[in-house]
Length: 120
Image (cartoon, rainbow, N blue to C red; front, side, top):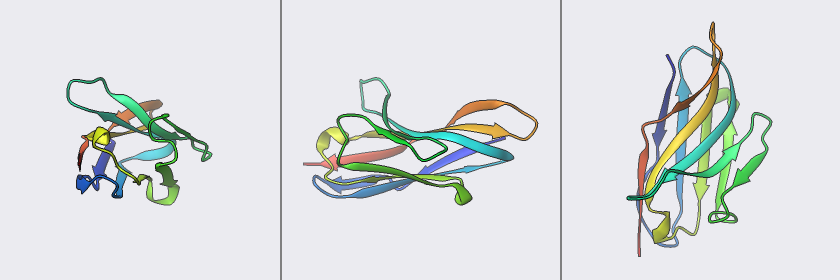
């Protein structure tokens, strides 16, 4: 089985930085795209940033210039470095990854989420 475990969430003041990490573990043959989503109370989950297997990145307009997504393939880890945080960034942040397991096909997995709270 595959697990995605996020870490790095917490309480931060507006304008401050925070870095989230997500580690994939299990019987993994390869990882394609990795993504960060977020869901605020009463809102739908939305894409924050994505990074392809080749390193191409994409960002939601609301975080462009403030967030940077990166990955370490050797560690099966994806990061999102967040700067200039705003109260509206407050949400549960979820990691998502397209993973190929040994003996199985490609499918998407989700982490359990990590809370980010930005105080004004």
